[in-house]
Image: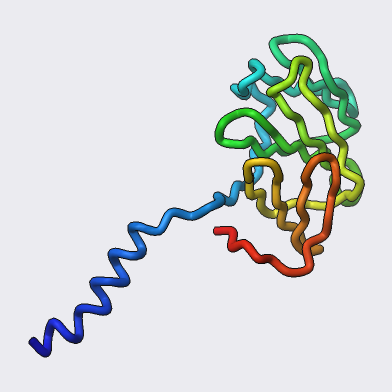
Length: 150
């Protein structure tokens, strides 16, 4: 009985660790040029000198002035954030592949992302400057989080 009293909290903690499902998943950048499968088609980034042309199924839909890029895809393939690196902080662009042609939304602040958390109608981004939310075309710096992102 004494042994059970000592091990019971450990057993409960172990069970809780396996039953709790995180609400968001952090994602690290991918620097590949593609092809990247999305809900709208196959995306490729074709380098042309100091620019990259974003193509979906071989048709251009955006151009990025950058020497290199990195991207974060939503697991469903519906959205993607692209970091376009030139000099200094990177330009950020959100692609929404649920529309034809894809929606292209440029973010107002340049920053280097260290993590992306996809939510239903927003994306939360972590950078050296702090946390930001991009929702319905608006970038907002978060001062305190009510939601826990894992």
